[in-house]
Amino acid sequence: MKTTVAIIGAGPSGLLLGQLLQRQGIDNVILERRSGDYVLSRIRAGVLEQGMVDLLREAGVSERMDAEGLPHDGFELAVNSRRIRVDLKGLTGGKSVMVYGQTEVTRDLMEAREASGGQTIYEADNVRLHHLESNRPHVTFEKNGETVRLDCDYVAGCDGYHGVSRQSIPANRIRTFEKVYPFGWLGLLADTPPVSNELIYAHHERGFALCSQRSATRSRYYVQVPLTEKVEDWSDERFWEELKRRIPDDAAAHLVTGPSLEKSIAPLRSFVTEPMQFGRLFLVGDAAHIVPPTGAKGLNLAASDVNSLYRLLAKVYQDGRTDLIPNYSRACLSRVWKSERFSWWMTSMLHRFEGQDEFEYRLRQAELDYHLESEAGLRVIAENYVGLPYASIE
Image (cartoon, rainbow, N blue to C red; front, side):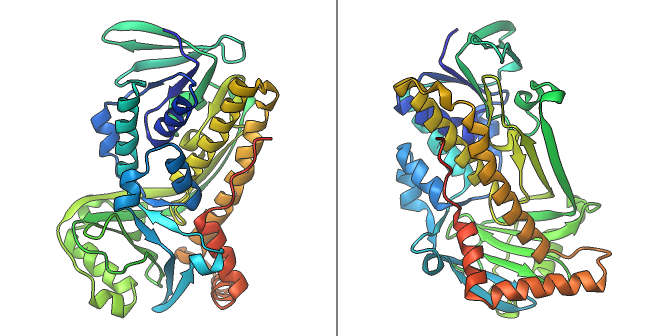
């Protein structure tokens, strides 16, 4: 087999990259080790930055998002029952975010790829990357008991933190940076109307809570828990009672509860790989970086990587600009570290840290109060939340 770009991973970043390249006439094949149904079963965040919304529109996959997604012009920060609205549109000159589930983004991209005739090979086993520093890299994989070779010009590693792409780079050629937080998020998904039209991020002495949503009839809620907690120890009733304790009283009074569709505990960590490229391999999304979910940057950071790689490859094949290839990592990492900073800040300000001394606690409170009581501070939060500008590849 031959193609121009081999894309490893059929999550939203791999599918979005494939769709954008396909529309520019750049042939690509996507390899995915899981089935399509498994990919669609993964439940993830659904707050899309303005930049990702625009990119999905450019990719021609925004029809359902624009019809069913929920534009949000603001969100709330609740600090010990005090509610402060962050006016995204007013503080950023008209920008906003879109609430639209990652599962739905993936479904739209899958349908667009099928309609375009692009090739996606699911359940591709034992994927291996070869000769990445040469002018003729290739990928091998197993399908139906046979080993298949895929020759290509470039490889895009969109296969997540545990994927083969980053593992294919020699350890002495990359550096990794990591911070692990001493707690996780217990999340519950329910077919109940959201408690608020906008998201509520709550800081409480018992721990953090988040009231989010997937649609006008489906809600997603989270509470901070120690990493020692187990999902099976949390009945729906226990979850709802704990959530009510942590959110403002007027919100708790209007909370509609119901049976959970899904419950899980996600650990929180920050992770960055430098550089994000090795020879003709480009790392995209979770293969290169992880952010804690506070601030909703994970999927959006992957989209900004896709934007950089898509525009780079378009210039390579349309204008012969191979000189731009070394710029990919620099362009991505500039935005990655700024998003890491914002996610770390939101996590540090809103969560309860066991063993924190009183002085450090007071400093965190003062830092949070400063931002919430200052228009300049609120503008900083808003600008980061709607998404910083995409970096130029030149």
